[in-house]
Length: 369
Image (cartoon, rainbow, N blue to C red):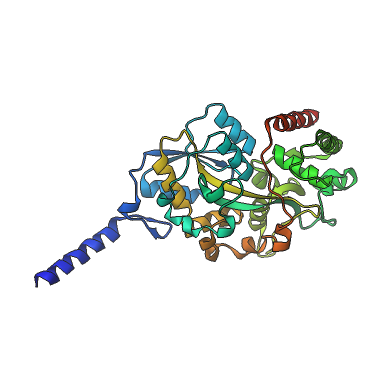
């Protein structure tokens, strides 16, 4: 009788625990997994790169206020941190920038024991060249940089010449307008691929050639925008073609799909000359005073359903393999086939002298605009 009472007491206690403990994206989080959380967390991410409802759910569930800021490029993120912005906790740099930040000691190592949802990440996205064994960062989203264009155009683009060949660019300029990403490495990478070079070319003559190539077509560009071009340019059709990240084109396409136009207004191509493969990551700054809370937040975002909600909102492929069963088919279907992925290049960090040359050449380009 006493044994039976004890079993009943244990059962009741277990039921109480299940009722009072919060759930994160469908995953039960036990007290043993929960650190003492800070009252706020400072997050610095790309624009339009998360589901805001996921942020609100985290705040409401764990009573942690998320202070959320946006950056437009990896270089802007790096400059901000190097200028002394020590208040950020969780940041979302791209592959090559992670390598540079590790070298500059700007990132904290993560405690994988605090990240049980790391098991959800696809092995394809783990152990990348820029962060072997994922000591500092967790893969977030990934994709390709290419060209987005209106499906209604009579001449569909096939390569980077649509943006950089004067004759081709004039057509797209006259039929809606051209947007270029306001991102130094992305623009140079596209130009260098168009000219037949590697995206990591360091030859000053080739950079000068790239500069001279884009200067000839600058008058044909509608805008340089990488911050909100998806919502301000693509969806309202303020341009007809754009240098673009795959997820932004997918989001614009989903946003313009209707009953009469189920396929949406936008299409995406990987240019025939080749392109960039990128992977964005969740990392913690070396100056963060909220390490445990930052890891808890990252683990929350890695929950399968939460990761799927983010992918479905942003249009980007998720590095979260467990999330795929919840991700919209149109996002999964746009991922390039293996034979295309094999031809893509990663952007690699530059040495100081080459980085200065890139910066100087980029300044010359923008000053000519």
